[in-house]
Length: 286
Image (cartoon, rainbow, N blue to C red; front, side, top):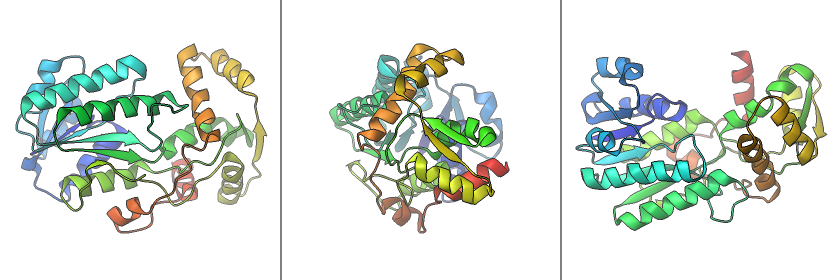
């Protein structure tokens, strides 16, 4: 039995779909906050159980019988994030899970400029302390984040963002396929994987060139001072912690934390991962 958390989210759902192409549905289970959102999976023979990171007892029940658990990282930061992961890891130990795979991130480190990467590093410490076999999937920075940063530029033609550095933007589809391959036993890593990245690390100057080529429109790149970007973000209604979190992505990129490009993802999926131009064209066409 393979159990997937967050199975109604972007990465978890895609991973379940790729997993069902590889193994029978009765060997797949999902732990979700709202089982109604996974009703179609239940109809296909997937075991669906309610599990909340804020309710450890529910997690232990939803993890029952798991040979492997895919722990999809929470969309939270700081203590709230790490405490949720700790609750899930403790529940996995109590449930007798054989191996935990965790969706970490390239650049995970205690001294990262990006808070989420510090949270990932702390979660990896928790996994290491369990004594269980574990794998941390060092996923490349999600390309969907870059697309969110580009949403305003999509209309204005100007990519007005803080100074950055090259980032190995990576697609959810490719990462889900690689994760399913690992869960299905096609490959195995102990501890952190190499960075699972797209084929190139790009800064937003290069992204502007890619967007121009993809659309036939001219895109410019304007560097916005950090303080001005923070004020703009607050003016659009974002809470201060979110504004600081977004700004820290650029600080980490400038620090070279997301520049690595590695062939491991391509090896796992058996082809070159989608480049950023392809992902941008697909997203903007939709």
